[in-house]
Image (cartoon, rainbow, N blue to C red):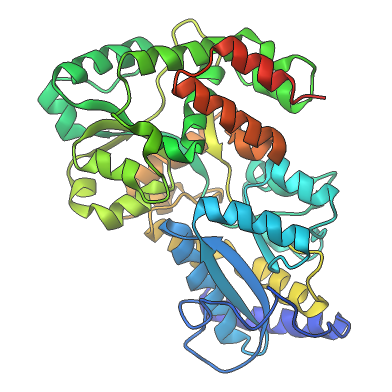
Length: 448
């Protein structure tokens, strides 16, 4: 579908929805007229008109490009039903959106990760059922990804960005100088750590100050050791679920890595929002970085020469004898847009029409591919093969397509209070301030 057809379609649909909508009332905080990016990529060329809805997104990477571009298309075609756009850093956003929801002044389009966080919004009545209004969009995306926004058969969130598996990035130049091969097993990884330390290079970069990057390690290791059933029992609320031996074994492996000087010095004070963990990789101060596919677009901007010659990427190593499938992946199935229950009818109509007509149409998908993202859309193999970043996108797309299990990031899969407790206790593991047994005991108290 061409952009011209999308715009024409969106105008017609919005007109119909607006006729149905009752008088929406006046502008409320966070809901109209003040989108700070309304003069930028989402302004449709600076046309005059009315902003009736707002959206909050995260800064940086392919998402920022995608939302600016697509909301710009919408605003250009719908000057009297514009959607303003604001961006926030990841950690700041999570606090801000919780406060806004509690105060009843959330943006019309609420950015999220699906899972337990979205379920809590549903249970609290913060977001609306938009099953009928977004049926065309849901048909365009992979069912396994669309499922992340569906509860009790109703659509409360729709995918809005790339599927984001966690990938093992490496600096090929550093590995070559140290004579280290890319590890395919945990044993090979620990051997590589020893060799890299002998050559004076930090094996792994990790942004410990942000805490959530620690999750990637426990998620992959728990799955490799015990399979997805261990964490599923936690999600199911089974008493004592964290006592599954897979958790303690994974935590012990993490502490073995810490004690072997597996992470760069001072890792507990490195922040992900500043991309400092990425800088350590592309400047050659660390050999590896376990991070989401979403950082690839940032690397292209911050270190294009390194991406062209030096950046390598692969899947997380196997754990010999583990019960988990080596094809299992962890990460974010996608990010999701939900629509605030406190938005006016006019704002809801504009937001859902934008979602249903523009998100993941051909042009939207192409923007994502051009930025190095992985669209959760079926049948893209031939298109990806022609993309500028075909090697990286192809790896990530195949990981998603072939994975027997795609585990949503635990801090998003769990309810917010349990997720915060998880991050707190996991940080103590990485800083050697608690034992695996103490972690298990603390997390078991979050169930029931």
